[in-house]
Length: 365
Image (tube, rainbow, N blue to C red; front, top):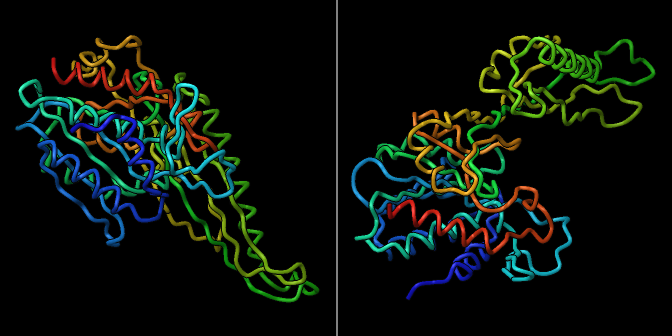
């Protein structure tokens, strides 16, 4: 007995796989579902043993379609939902629930296609890569990526199913995040000049980041497909000090780089004037995406779409990891990212239906 797309999505949404929390129950469910429908599966465990990923395939050899999804969703804490965020509900032609748009809706579509395609009607292999902790820096796929081709073979096309309103996306910026720690000497503020205030080099680093950004605007690479059309470096969090009358001996600054594929975080960091008594550690990164829209596999997929033209997005995805393997890779999926991460997150039922129809037609060609 086949499950409806609504039933599949309800099951997926029902697992509260909030980023940095457990996801094993969802992966168990997806693995059992795919095995029931003739897929070979390979389970992967995170380095800390707390998370699980999944690779799955039906069909033999290279070629075919690889669909990529992540199992985690952003938290609901602090948001006001009209109903239970992890209980799917329907209203006005939309399904509501955490992850419906980002990105359990796409995963539900892939599973619906997997169960509906008869083995004899499937003209090419269909594979799935399901990761963990995408929302906090693509941690899962970073651990999984080296096993993808040895396990699944080399697909013709990789679809990363983030919400793009079913429009092809061939580009997004990469990202690297950093923690800077400035050290000083604690002392009474009445004698402040006698001690090294850790906030001072931290503030100098903020100014250096501003100056580096100005240089990137004036002299850095440019790509008019993005807004802004240049790489950015941004200071987001500054912490330091315990009381007004104590000279702080430690300050912490969190900052990030979002870079065009024509530039690297390393090159941008090399031009940053780092003050003395500051130590910088990279805390995460993911590569950008710059796929060729004229690649035969991408053109073949685009030919079946109502909106075949390719574009870019401002948000990051796991796509760059697959592209670095030499795979033709696009971001393409149902939903609008503007609906993601919001209270009462939702997705149009019609987009899920269109996604399933397009995937089924492509795989049966």
